[in-house]
Image 1 (spheres, one colour):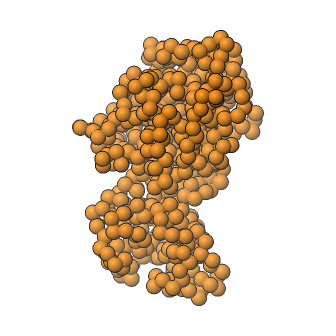
Image 2: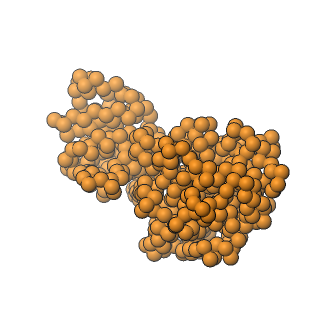
Image 3: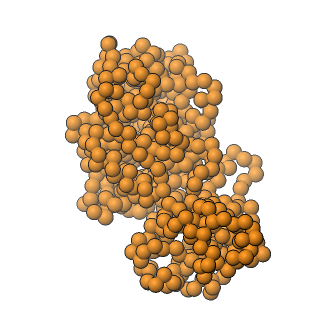
Length: 485
């Protein structure tokens, strides 16, 4: 999809169809040329409501207010409504709420790209999106003149952000037969070559040398050998050094603590955290952000077999801590434990953020659409929360407490891999990871549990059925802010 910016009035732009956004059900606005037809169609002006007037070649969509989060979902709904039409070119005005803030323009671009996404790799009949060109008029109708250069940057960054999100979605949606640890490593290598990133891949021999025994234990029963991926973006004189760590469970059967059949479906999504890190690194390089960013992914498959690790085992993590295993389905935290230790060994970062579909408890706590953010200090958590608001992603804090920490105690090892209570599981999983954060990074680390929004089996907002690419856009917004500081 190509995007063009022009200062020409909307009336002078040639296109197959015009998209008109109705704000707060204001049918009297001079953009609205079909008030009677809209009323006749029963148009009520509720957020994301669509009315396609084929005879007029105009598509109306409603928003509650001119805000990036509202505009993004409305535009996504609009492009979906055009999926079965033959319109190829589209025009629309810019909907700005400030001459300096281009967030709404960026949201428009993201809405088009994210809303048009389809995953049809395994379908014999492929879907097609006829709209291939969008022209946005920056005509001075607001009462102020827009900065063309800033608008162009917003358009470019919105396109990069959305395409990185779709890149992530593709990886997550790919089946475990086609995407396993070696595949993720190949994706990382190709990405490094295309995006001017440094890439290092650790195979089992190197993993044993690095004493990443908990990760190796999880991988033991799979025919697919594990990989640890390290991608780096290193500009000169960076404003900050950031480490991102992702859980890349290409499939999770639960191991010997086998999941029920219904719970195994969608477990291709357990690589969402690692996939998000790959998507973020892609965008960071394309934006050429003035921030040094390191992306680490623990790519592993958790299966059953005569070599599987077992409940009652005691494993030794890279930092020397011993872990009593009481549930082999709490495997993601074991992978992250070693990768977090390795990441801290390799990079002295200003901040560390990890991403994982770690617990069903996170979904129980806040629902399907929201990520939970945990850690020891407010600063890194707030960085993510603030960035989530403008990105359109939903995130909220879950606070640690020492009462829950005690439930991870073990009589035979330093810590147990699951809590002795069924309650507060998202928090206790985060507190388990805390054991593998060194003193230097204790207050510079945040854990983001994306189990809720990473993979949802229905369309919501700008997100499709399946993978959403959770974590990509909010992290990019955070990194962009650091680059400007």
